[in-house]
Amino acid sequence: MIVSTFIPKQGICALVVESPDDLWTLRRLISPGDTVVTKSSRVSKKEDEFSRPDRGERVKVIIALLVEGVSLDSSVGRLRIRGRITESSDENVSTSGSHSVSITPGYGLTLRKEEWTPVYTSILNSARKTGRRFLLVAMDRREAGIGLLGGSHLTILSTIESGASGKGGQEVDTEPFLRKIVGVLRNSWREGDMVVIAGPGHTKMALANRVAADPDLRKSYVVVDGFDLSGADGVRSLLKFEGFKKVASDSLLVEVQTIVDEVIKRIARGDGKVAYTLPRVKTAAEAGMVESCLVSDDVFARNSAEEEVVRVLNTVEEKGGTVFLTDSSLEAGKQVASFGGIVATLRYALR
Image 1 (cartoon, rainbow, N blue to C red):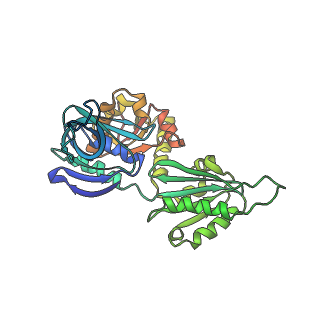
Image 2 (image 1 turned 135 degrees about the vertical axis):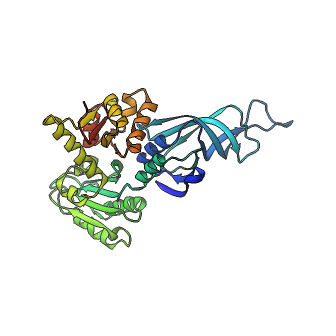
Image 3 (image 1 turned 90 degrees about the vertical axis):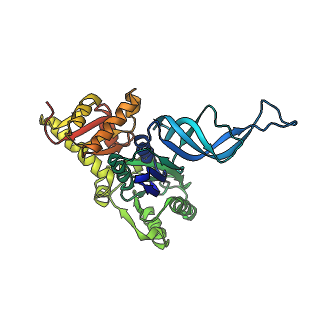
């Protein structure tokens, strides 16, 4: 998440959403009664002798929306905000009735709150500390899967085929194949990213040579040996590979997996310093017992009380705990989902 303006005393925060994790942050920050200023489209009806009364032109405008409701659909990576337009950059746009905007990665907005509490600052600061991003390539001579790991969320960017056949087949020029991979990496790279190249065979070294020649990509890259999968499935499996965990030892994903492993150990030995399912985590959160709380990105699909989930997570932060979002398509997220979508390590046992 990119925060360009933050004035807590005035309750103003201007930001740009970068990832699905940021949508979660916004879901916890935005409440009914807040005002969201963002770009949208609206039907503008002009009344003149040549215009049809039942038709209007859809125009792009900047609106201020008084929030009445907010909901997150993590399956499609979208946050929907509903409310009433109070201001518009186009005087022909009606401010009557309700309106909704869908926020996706890449969107920018300004949030205004009547009171910006310390817990909101904590939530915002947590979102700004997602750590280093990783551009992952799992490849062999026939195909390459390319993924982006940001925070604890994995996005498969592309799967590229070289056109090469199996063993004994005719050799194919790999230059176009390598150029396509580098092109995807270049389009997704930003300052601070690490490129991780893995897979069977020697083609990965040819890619590493190309990366080493790029003025930006070469700033931080590594080749992981001993990994024998490729494609999109290879990218997902790479996250569990010990060679990658050593490279990404300070990443958010590895931290999340460490907490999940600790949860499983505590349950196995009958340690009471763990809570799972929303009601029990809520009880622990209200008592200030939660040390770390893991929540699966499909938790809202498991719980109809979306506002209740948000309140519990914000209570954890307010009482000094830390909240981590997990990607339900990855191993750590699947394990959290098996506990009802939410699990917490506690400072002391819950009776």
